[in-house]
Image 1 (cartoon, rainbow, N blue to C red):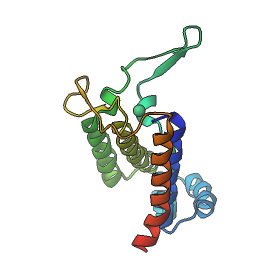
Image 2 (spheres, protein in one colour):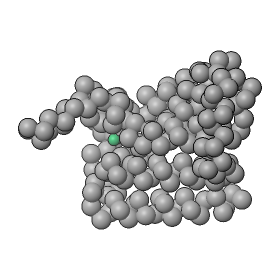
Image 3 (cartoon, helix red, strand yellow):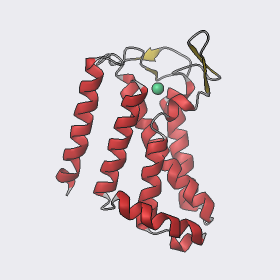
Length: 183
Ligand SMILES: [Zn+2]
């Protein structure tokens, strides 16, 4: 999926998460500075937690691509990265480990800063999973068995073509309907 596609779908997911959690962006953003300034874990309420997770989702929209540490060479117009594209950071077990680390740290942490970071981390992981789902539908696919092995693809759409926009449209529409179904 193209970068803009990942951004739109992650934003739709974050907004849906806020809606089903009954917290508005306005409410979240207005309470967050007070909570963060306090530095006290007891002050992190439900609204602050949901907002931190949603912010993590926005940050993680292109998480699997950014974690590759990419460099774009303007002269040769090529993209190079420290970790080869669509390998380790697009491998589901990597995200299982990341999610588990965030979840366990969050439940065990009694430190204010750790709690905040892992709340954002949980949202980041959720967006990472969404990114993987979107990428497995493209012809390049993602590795499922070994991180640097053969990639699996569902071949449902091609990046930056009409099919991708249809997929984005369906996902955003689904995000609009989902909160009404669970209400
Ligand atoms: Zn990707």
